[in-house]
Length: 435
Image (cartoon, rainbow, N blue to C red; front, side):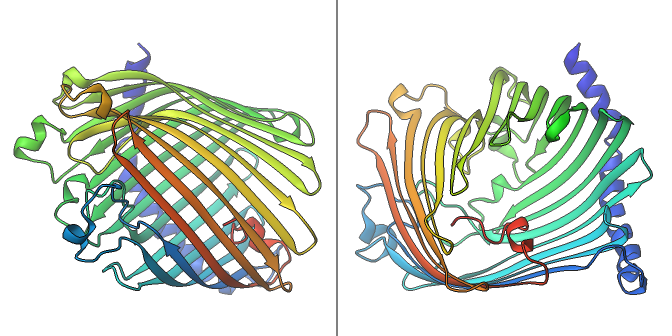
């Protein structure tokens, strides 16, 4: 019964996907002239600009196994490389008739130059959002975003340059039923495409809808009960791939989410869901799972913050031998402000990845990967606008009890220049997050 309700909800608003995407362009086109025509804005326009230059050493950009024949695969005796990167970021916020009705534009442009591997690339990301409020009852957001980034190499299965193109459109609507009750509705459409033929079978088109009931409590705490449904299709999969990877699946969820301000120093958030996945043709591989996401943030002192995150849910891989993975992990992180100008961060991440292969007959030793990562950073604010930093991590991945191991070490040092017309904007925009 619960999944019939989800399906009915999805079908009732499926036609709204294209409408929501068109509305993003229409509303932005209408709102843009208002930026210049509005002469009595109730709030100040916000502008953040950041320029960054960095150098990074990477011991294994392609994430090759330790026993790989590097000379035969890459044509060189070393799998390590050095990378020079330059980035430009900007965020502009223009309030319209009120601080809650505003136009937000954010963009990033970066170039990466590799010393020896053929991975030179130019990345970008751009996002336009129109946030609005209509009286007491209605509020919402329309968003359109595009990004281009280097493929996230996983286990040495690809050793050529590949770029991921992603386009996202979404519409959010919130109805304020009472001072303590809201009904949120979110619709999202996302397209992902790869440049290489090898990864083209993972080009995807996602369509999702989320409907819930949210209770508001003091201190910004919330509890939400909701239904969500996501349909993921792979347009490039034909022929034999239909019988191995399939061309489409649907994820239906019933979830309970909370964001709880336990005290002035501690905040806790959680999302627990019963998920059911159904494949278009591989009906024997349908499954159900309880997915979990937990986060705890504790301000131990004015200078020290601790965090814990835990997750358990399925993920996809760009590996034609793997249908999906069920990942369970934990992240411990901390930050210390050593002085007014110096901040130190450290984290430990451990994740167990259980591979669900296309061929279920794969042996048990090949189905589990244990990934462990230790990392940290140090940042020094030379002035209000300039920051020097160094960051790095050590990553190790082991396949079951076999001898297959992947290791990667990175070290990055860089300089940032940040301009903000109002103090604190860069931090809020995420421009000064730990590296």
